[in-house]
Length: 138
Image (tube, rainbow, N blue to C red; front, side):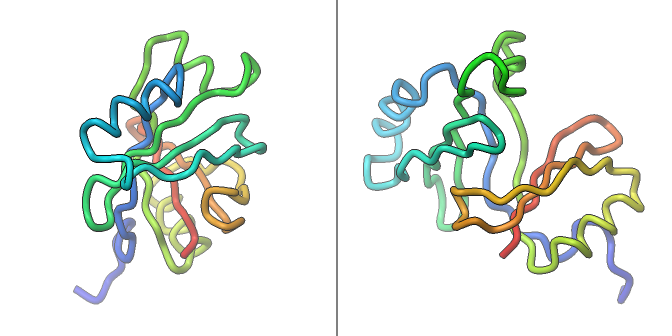
C-alpha cells in the first residue's frame, strides 16, 4: 500500500462550469448559497476567462467560467452547449503529481499562473477518457 497512485495527495477543490454570463450565474447561485458564499470575479488573462467561485461546502466550490471573447478556448465549449468543464484538485507537489498522471496516460497542457489563486501554478490535463482536470499548486 506504500505505492503512490495517480491521484494520491490531491484534495478536491472545485468543478468548473462554463457560463455565458458570470453576472447572471452569480444571481442564480446567490439565491441558492447566499451572497456571502460568492467570491470576487477574477480575470485570468492567460486563459482568456473571467472566473468566480461559489462555496458549496467547507472546502468545495463551483467555479463559474466565462469566456472573454471568441478567441477563448472556453468560448468554443459554450458554442457547443458544453457546460461541464473540469474538476480541480489542490496538490502540494504539482510537478510530481503531473508526472504520476502522465504515467497513467494523462496528457498535460502548459502550466500557467492563476490570478484566482494568488499567482500559483496551475495546469490542465486530459484523462485517457478525454475528461479535463486541473491541478492547483498549494
